[in-house]
Image (cartoon, rainbow, N blue to C red):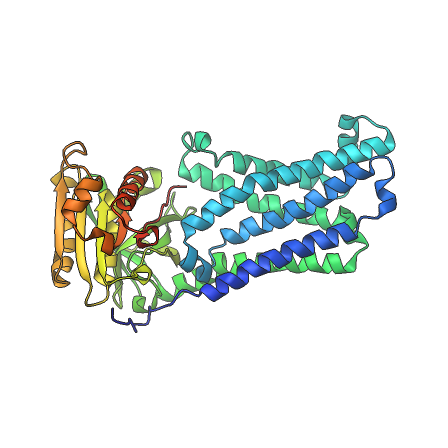
Length: 447
């Protein structure tokens, strides 16, 4: 494989990810050490002492986990390029229930401890703490906001809410986290009289805020301002698919690879407040780039009516769906539906000398989006492009079909993009025909 020396070239920094992992472990250890050190043996023997100790320790671990959750979705590009935003999001979702349980145990434990110490009823004591303890009211509001955001992420909830609603609800998690900070420093016994612990937590909060501000705010503002993207034209590729051509300044300096995506925010009424992830469908030139999107909801519906000259705000690039993942110089690209979008850009960005096979899957010929361009780039690489059209019952993508389409499939890197169910099914079939898991590359973008 040839070496790419273009301005967009980058190499995943696994050493930085390992460093981040070690820092996470060190931070958790310090959290436990400082928390346990603040607990005196005498206090454990008093009425409610054990319940209060449990409440305080769980609050420390829960708060640390909460900050880790924020960092996981802070879109740190050097981490995201190695692990992938979909994996980081899964980790974020996996941690969330444990963090919430810890924070609720803290709330119940400390309320119970104080109630036992003062020989009061649990409800009466909670109301007393809520109305008289500094920061308790804001912390309670913050916990409720975090709980609502977590509940909205469960599958049964996501089936009944729009992405835009889910996104707006999750914005309130930042408010919930911020509200808990003042409570932690003003009421936590591990901070009021412990300068080392107080300094550790202030530094941890400032680091988290700094990371979020840089990667989610300052860097996107800088890139969007520098590249000055605007909509040049809108072309309907299909009844439900639209391509948006954009103009900008020095887009060749944007560090994006074929197969990656950006978070797009179109600055017009009804759209400017929300960012959505869309893959590029063609590699940027010095002054132009393109994105191709399928109609899936309110936001994507509005894209069909975009007017030339609309300003565009971008975040990213993100994604690990790039040729840097290849372990061989033989590649099979499989795309279905609008999943051909990243396949098209990845194909354009492949190094010279690759043995390329492309398979496009669609229910009808009208659903073959960007097929002509994809066939052209495949031929440019000296490869083959196969167009599979028809219902799944007649044109399957199971193990037997894959062996017939590509007898050497087990020796190839496979890049797969399409609906989630399609990707899961084909990925399973690929493993059945002997493709190692580390050579099956795909990303999921459902919220």
